[in-house]
Amino acid sequence: MTLVALAWKSARARAGATVLTLIAIALSTALVLGVEKIRAGARAGFEQTVSGADVLVGARSGGVNLLLYAVFRLGDPTANVSWETYQAFAARPDVAWTIPLSLGDSHGGFRVLGTTDAYFEHYRYGDKRPLGFALGVAFDETRDAVLGAEAARELGYGLGDDFTISHGIKSAAFAEHSDHPFTVVGVLRATGTPVDRTIHISLEGMEAVHEGFVGGAPSAIGRRPRAPRSAPAEALTPDAITAFLVGLKSRAAALRYQRDVNTYRREALTGVIPGVALAQLWRVLGPAEQALRVVSLLVVAAGLTGLLTMLLSTLNERRREVAVLRAAGARRRDVFALLVLESTLVAGLGALLGATVLNTALAIVGRGLEASIGAPLGPLGLSVYDAYVIAGVTGIGFALGFVPGWIAYRRSLSDGLTVRI
Image (cartoon, rainbow, N blue to C red; front, side, top):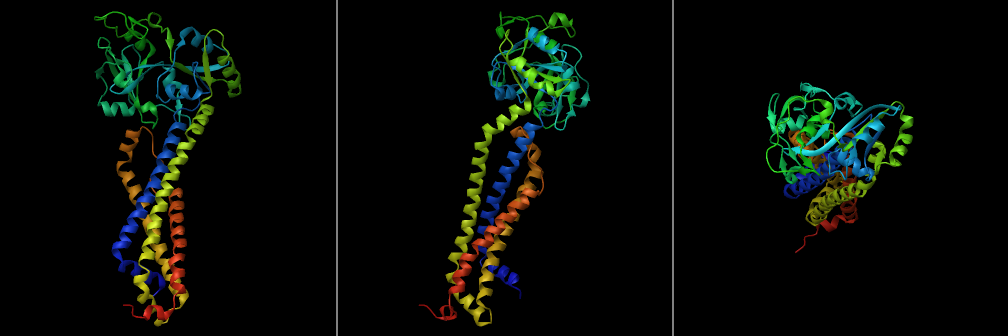
């Protein structure tokens, strides 16, 4: 019988302790891999949200804050950008396109974004992939709306369905625009970005529902006249927008454009390069990422400590077993190797079990989990990182086996054959 087979039988002989140790190692390994998949998925989700835009412009604020509320729909804007200022920067000769963004309303827990056709034409995500329609077309009239994939799925809306939006975000919404219903005319394909959780309407539609509002609130109580389905664009030109994305004819002009925005004298503005702001965001979140990794590694250490404890606690019970093996011709180094192999097998199987269970669970519930946390997970299925973790846990189990192996190696044959009362 080979030493591997003998080590396996030895582990099976103490099935209760072995199973508990396997479960502890499997759970700790699953935690390490799960934390990494969520971390990698969140980072990838942030990085692929917007691409191809050279500058993001909003009211005076921190660059990270501007990126969060304008692109990721997290938080609220500090102020708006006047329409005149937007037109002045959009009309510059070095500008290829702009996408105005107007936020502030919601429906069913989803943000409402006012924009123009340029959004569907120029917005890019991931590897500069354009937005596409799963159903319908882009908005054309003031009461048309286009839903992101997740918003359409959770709200249960289809083409032709009517709904109204609220002034404010989620629980903070305090005014229902019940006199200005919108009709779903399109549903975007899933992107894995905040676009999926956004309801898109035209700037004219956004302006129409806020007729009669002063300082963000209704100027008078009572019903307001219903906005016509189509109205002249000049009659519904907004006074201000939240922010705007800029695509330049030459990316080399981005720094000059950003400087001109930040030093603009007529209005307090902030211009950021999305990639630079994203790098700043990761620097802010870096300590939290490292803390999660440290906690998960400590859990793995606890599981492996349980393995060492099991081997040491059963070592006294195995004195006679080891002595019989020695009497049957096994050498000291064979006994040493037997205990090391047993430790390695338990650690390796526990790590493999944890990785397998985690990836199987994510394959089953991964899409629902992505929707609940609002960010994609890392690659599903066993990855190179998973293989490294499994190998690392197995290697540590191998090293821990040296402790009981050395103790057994030092014991004499007569120590195990002596009857103890």
